[in-house]
Image 1 (tube, one colour):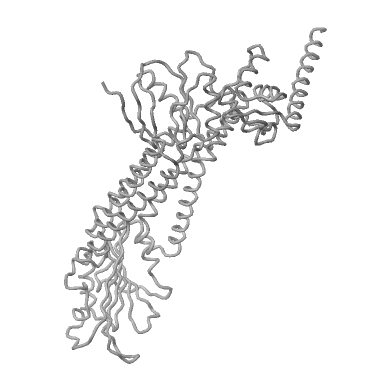
Image 2 (image 1 turned 180 degrees about the horizontal axis):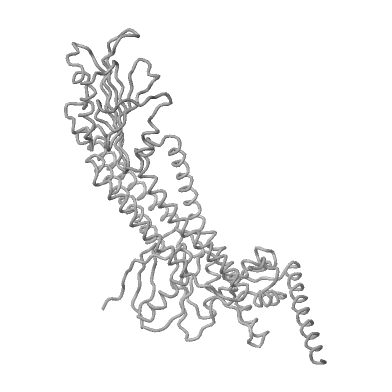
Length: 107
Length: 445
């Protein structure tokens, strides 16, 4: 079943929002995501464009600066909240995993 | 060696997988896309090598040579990962990447499906939905007309109805195919999977080809009818094609000016001026041809009435003999479609008569039933609430009905093999007159 919009974040949504804790332009984000994940996650240019458009529309980020064709963005409190919720969700998953695996290990 | 080549290719508005497959194959053959105008694709010669292709559907101004800010953003982001914006049309943009293993433009299927839908909603999806809504509304109006007045509908509107049905089916299939693809693609994307658009695009193309074939048949069939019907349909066919050609010319000009980087304002003025000139020329030619062919009137000398060069097939004089020096109002008219023809002939005396006296008046409507399926429908539609069945043999007919609440006219419905004749007399017809009517209308084709 298709999920409701932004109810949960995909890995790439998560990292794009995480990048925007600091003001960054699109090209910076393309470079920053692989750097902060040791090359594990890459965001394609088309995907980033779509995500930025969708995040702007949902007011999860704001455009902060326009210098020529370079546009910079920053996360909003709403975006921060979404990021926090996703973190809690992933953490809960991780804790469940550890708890269950730990029990199995004891058995 | 040819450095450019052109080809026709129709792709459903959402079928990016087919565009990608097609352009990657062309790149391996040494052809790179240079421009697209509707279904007219232009390629330029290049070194044959593998390429990765990606398509976006951002709405661009049809006059402005400058790309929109959104497209500039996307092009800059793409450039950073090796994707070069190669073709930019008002509804579709094509990116090429010549690296061997590039980072794809799209790495998140959820963002892709949502982003594509957002872009399509702002561009072609609105046009398709609008067209579908209008065609559907027209279809409903025609269906209502069919329900209210089946004979008039079958003899006048049925050709337009068939074309409209085909139009609704063609547009509906493409919209439906996109909806089905999107619903499934969203579910797959939630699982991190991508969904190819080609099966849905292929279904749309198949229906479109079917539509074109049926449309040509629908236009060609009436060309085998009576000469005035043939002329009218040929005229509609040619004028329809001329209209499409004119529209194509205007779009071609607008696109050419946009690609030559002509200012937006100048492009608008030139396009508007050429459109105005072409519309005026089109209307003038239409008016001239209509005048030349007598407005395709069913009473023209080459119509169904041609069989009766002296006027009406059945006159008061033929039926009753000498009528003295009376004045008559004579009228004939008609309509004909693929399935039905209706022709009216009236001869009404202008002499005043008393309420109980006979009138030298005869009026009839001949309904030619070309499709036997509609025979009973036509008969039941013509039959009056108050009627009785009478002996058909004097009329040389299969069945005959008489209107019982007739007023001053004696009205009958005569059912022959291929036609129905509703005929009213200003007197009580004799056996000989009935036979004459049967001989006149019984063998009609």
